[in-house]
Image (cartoon, rainbow, N blue to C red; front, side, top):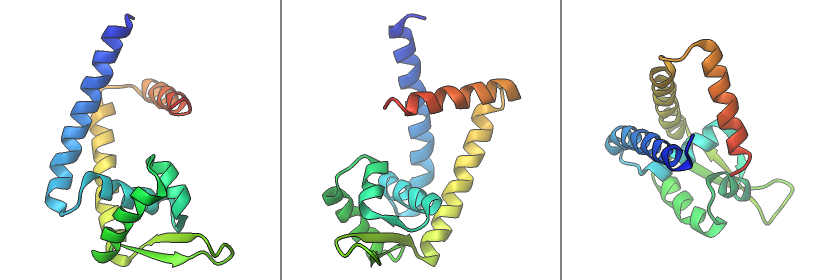
Length: 137
């Protein structure tokens, strides 16, 4: 396949996913970045600030601003790390867990709809390809 065509397909897929996501996040009072922060913490459980920044792809300084805002909204709590006094652990509050569950369920429904045209074998191949690509980026 020609790379120009593949690039176009990837961008179109990304734009459709982003648009879908934005339509759901819009009514939550949160930004897409904030809900994804909640999503990552929801999957990881208590996570070091540095590790969370790495998963999101931002600096800890940038993440601090987001965590501050989510903490003020009562969705995250920041606690000193038990063994590393320089580190903080980030956890979801009860309200943060509600947001996580709602958004995670949205992702499951979105995934079901996206892959509904694929056979089980194609779904496994698709997942394997995405996982392989994620290791490179």
